[in-house]
Amino acid sequence: MTAPDKWLCALPVYNEVNFVDEVLDNVANYAANILVVDDGSNDGTDARLAQRTDVTVVRHPENRGYGAALTTAFEYAIDNGYDVVVTIDCDGQHQPVRIPDFVAAASQADIVSGSRYLAMSEDDDAPPEERMLINRKITQQLNRRLGLKLTDAFCGFKAYRVDALRKLRITDPGYAMPLQLWVEAALADLSVVELAVPRIYLDLSRSFGGSLDHAETRLAYYNRVLEDAITSACREGRKLPRRRELCPDA
Image 1 (cartoon, rainbow, N blue to C red):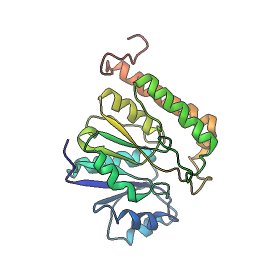
Image 2 (cartoon, rainbow, N blue to C red):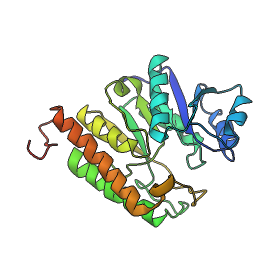
Image 3 (spheres, one colour):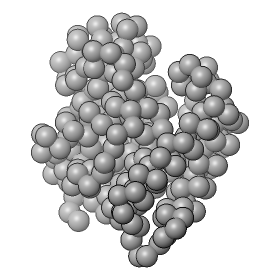
């Protein structure tokens, strides 16, 4: 694979009025092409975005979910002929200075996934315990069932080769979309590498939305999305590469 000639940095945004300008100012230091998918913000974020001339904004008229915002970013990258799309969250937890590292790594892999647990630093923030435990449980499941070697299933800092995105069938609109993405990536035999990123938590009170703020409910939701993705693939007769079994009766 050669280094990407044309790449995009995309940010899914929902009600980030306190962070959006500072994050975009920093992103603009490292990316020439920036897309913001405003997922129906109603806290003034849309007004802030309307004042900027250095980003392209696609707005969902109403909140559709994190997965839906990423899907819109993927479709934009495909439709506009980009080679690579880097996704970064807009809550200040990801460092834009690392964007070039993700772009460079995408010359060697279909998906470059940030990991907050690949390497430890004394400067890392302590993760909220329930989030860390849920991440660990889901990551272990993905590795066991799909033959992956992940250390962090949920980090939103990623780079994707756009040709690889064309092979994925992503339909989940919510926070569990990464689980469907990992199932699809395994089925498509995409190459994956992780890059270590620091653990930064600026707002421990951030909400996942309604009942998903309850840890057990959120874990059950993640498990259900994972099971649904695997069951759907089995029903369609899709198989993992290298004869690895995905379906219980395979």
